[in-house]
Image (cartoon, rainbow, N blue to C red):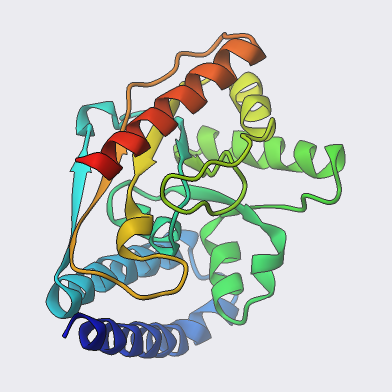
Length: 237
């Protein structure tokens, strides 16, 4: 039964996503469409996927640590375990900007939408040049009142697995001089890499913010310890 539910959900998810993108496609190429329209579409689509997850799969979301969600623009450093992480935040935070791999812009329609909503692409092969562009764009988004979300490991990890935390997160933290809010998840348990969704409740947990001004070693150590400890706790509870 659970396998059947997962198969049905996957069919609905990809079918609904394709249909939604096709309906919105003309707006992606019409000059002058306000960015907020694209952001509103992405938010509504994110909520709709949450609805299908609850209805078909019996998978619900619990948000913890809401008191740590900032009313002013900050950097959110999020553990990345699942496809869920790339879009569910649009149903929690208001108009976030994701730092994302530049090659994702090549995905038909999806890449165009990411560009239109103001996500921040980074080419990891271009080193400092790409880093400078990312910092400038991040500054612009924060100055415009948008929170910035980054996956500090740079790639998806399985539940219980950790990858080295990349120095890019410290560069943004140092340059923007705003707090960093760590985010722990257990999304990989319920929507793993193999795509077989499971019934239950996944957790998005906002942890206490790290104030600006720390040196690199102290900041990186505090960030990794906060995220990894909380993620491990979510696996055993």
